[in-house]
Length: 359
Ligand SMILES: *Cc1c(COP(=O)(O)O)cnc(C)c1O
Image (cartoon, rainbow, N blue to C red; front, side, top):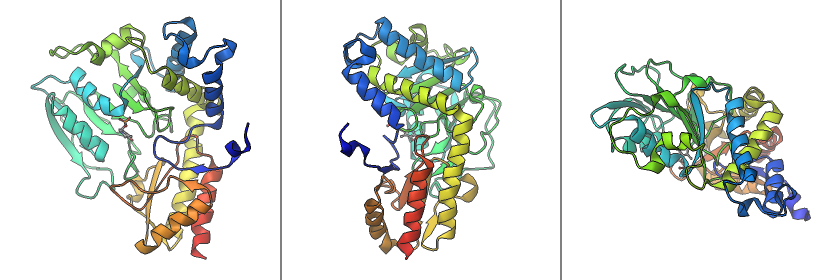
């Protein structure tokens, strides 16, 4: 391979984001010649045994790594997490019924907006007034709401539900930016969705895990492609799936399994996050922006005490091959995303740069 491919970049992008090197190598090989078939993974029918095996393995790996029971079905669907903002209420909420939503970031707010097209929304908690910098603590979820929707990790402002609230109604979660980054009882959710491009694979596919028992209870007519039951019946192949994106997910899931799964990832992610947060807390030039107890292990947001130095710091980090730490366009400052594939050494390079910058 050409030498330029080996230049080490420390990639803190929020999404699309870093994936294991091995996944990139295997994926590029498969584009040229998949498993010695003489064919590219991009030029074979999705209903051939070759691709069927990819889809089957991807779904099986999700079941295995998330320790899912038989009620939970695994789907790979088009449209990214944003499509789920509408698909969830379309499948679960009747017109006169109410769903409970948490408003803890821009993504949650978008989910609320879409749900209102299908039924009533009760926003049971919000951190909007506080600039989305914390996770709400004291709130009640009505027992007669159809479901409670949360965004487990707030990608933009860097907060995360450290403890999933226990409620007596089904929980629906947008896990786009922390899926499989920690050990969690996935069976306690009735529906989980995640855009793949943050922690799971290539953009263009969405992982959906749904408890089949909650489906089939709405009165409205659901367009075929939007009805989860059709996707389940067809084994996640109702129409042509985004084959390459599913393939990249499968490779990443294989890597995750080889690494030891969620438990090992959780330890590694904790280590990365505490290394960076402790530098932020101890370095007089920087401040963290999220409430300490709610800090995300995936997206670390911080600013400089002297705003005028931010441009200079960004240039300095670029010289150290650090990319992707500029904050979201709505927040400014910095955001370092520490997804599963990001090695601890990259965090060390960033921490060293933060220290050296002061000198
Ligand atoms: C990125 C993100 C989304 C949007 O995902 P798309 O795949 O672009 O639709 C939704 N929710 C969360 C939590 C995200 O981080």
